[in-house]
Image (cartoon, helix red, strand yellow):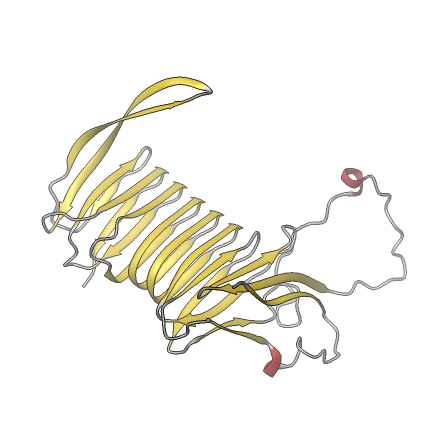
Length: 287
C-alpha cells in the first residue's frame, strides 16, 4: 500500500516575524518512518536544483532538516536561479519605485512510503533547494539531481547516485555503489564492500577518486580518453579490445571496438568499471 506522508509548499519570508514551522528551531525537522523499521530501508530522492547531503545515524527515522532552501532567514545570501527576462516572457517591466524588495524562498517537497521505500521529491525545476537528511545506517539509495552536489556518508547498503552538474562525495560507505556525474569530481571512500557486487564510476568532465579496502577481490576495467590512471595497488595491467554489436529497427547493425585497461586485485573478483572522458582515474588502497 502506498502512503503519502507529506506534501508541502512553503514560502519563507525574511522578516523579523516568528512564523510557525519556519523560524522556530523545534519545528525545523520532518521525521519519517519506514513501514518495516527493523529491516533495511530504501530511500529514493529526485531533485532538480540544489545539494543533497545524507548522513547515517543510529536511529530508525528519516529526518529532513528545514528550511532546505536558500534565501531563507538563516542563509539569505545563497544563490537562487535568475528569473526569466521580460523579453523572454513577453511581459513589460513593472515599476517598483518606492517598493522595498522582500527576500523570500519557496519550495515544494513531497514524500511517499511504500513497502519500506521512502520517495522524496523536491521542485519545481526553477527553485534551488538543498536537502539535508539523516538516515538509519542500514539504508540503500537511489539519488538523482540535475544541478547540485551529492554527499553521502556513514551508510551501509546499495547506492545508485547520479548528478549532471555537481560533485559526488561518498564517504565511509559499506556495500556497493554505482555513481556518475557529467561535470564534477567523483570521490568515494569505502569502509568495506559487498563481496559479489559489480560497481561502476563514470564522469565526462571530472576526475574519479576511489578508495577501496586493501583486502578487496576485484577485477578492474578502466578507461579515460583524455587523462591518466593512477593506483597504489599491486597491479599487472593489460590492454583489452572490447567488441560490441548494436542493432535496432531504426538503424543498421553496427559493430564497434573500444580499448580498455584491465587488472586484478588480490586474484580478481566482481567487475569494477571506471570511465572518464576528460579526467584522471585514481584507485587508492585503503586500510
